[in-house]
Image 1 (cartoon, protein in one colour):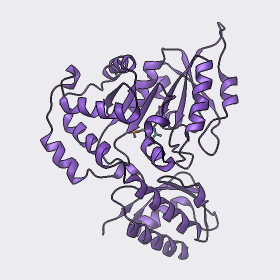
Image 2 (tube, protein in one colour; image 1 turned 180 degrees about the vertical axis):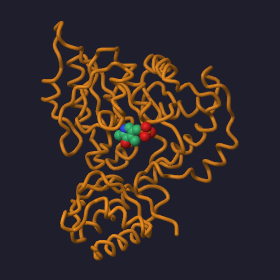
Image 3 (cartoon, protein in one colour; image 1 turned 180 degrees about the horizontal axis):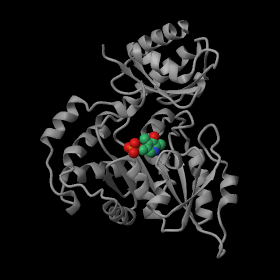
Image 4 (tube, helix red, strand yellow; image 1 turned 135 degrees about the horizontal axis):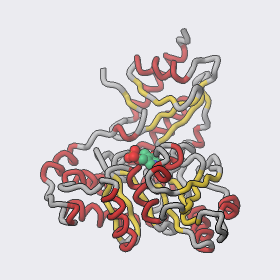
Length: 347
Ligand SMILES: *Cc1c(COP(=O)(O)O)cnc(C)c1O
């Protein structure tokens, strides 16, 4: 029995077109800047995000760390949401490796920040304080229901940053999902950002890789940060070839993942013991709560897995399901059938 794996959109297998492109890729040594396929992917990424240049890196975590280390020196401070992936899920790498001090501001439920709270957190020049250098935003916001953050908030954040001599980095692991859900182009969405990172290895289905995009000067410095982190890769064109397919063939289909997530959310909301608001599901991530008298999240996850449906427990009550290629509407219907069956048999 093959399972329906909704734990993450990192579970996407490379498409047949990717396998073919990877096998046929022209390659060179990318540390020398001589891999034509990597160079083509980087040009494409820069074009899509409206930035001058881009850098191919191993993961979203590396993309963020490279970006932060390029914007900040040791002892500098960044302001970011208390639910940010960078704060929650990256081992505190900015501090541990980069010597960068994180200052959190509460995320609102929609993943945005109260910009007055951000303004209040910016340090003035004083010998006691670290220097605030960077504002970090996340779009879509993973822990805040995968909510896409719109151009108006981005522009307001850009204005605040400009007035206070701050740079902006967008952790855009799923920025193409955000643009798709909002009906805007990525370049417009990140116009206020000095740097943006995004993942090829999530909904865009590549096996490996992320990109950092920014000005030519920024990317030249980011190349040094990548190298010191051990991220200089050689014939990386075999990986970049898949990334080119991600950016040319896999963006438009993200709407399908969003429709499937909405379908899943709507179906789950009808089940007794499950709590969520389907109106809050705007991209491919579905969070829901399970009533404590129904069962623990861990028990639900185990029972679903025994029936071939995999989801992720977040805490004792909360679970996450993520839609992605090649999961189809019929899979979602089957998953909902399994949910109703498992919830009906409490013991
Ligand atoms: C997945 C993710 C990352 C990290 O990407 P990896 O490739 O898993 O290192 C960073 N930020 C956000 C918002 C993510 O969802």
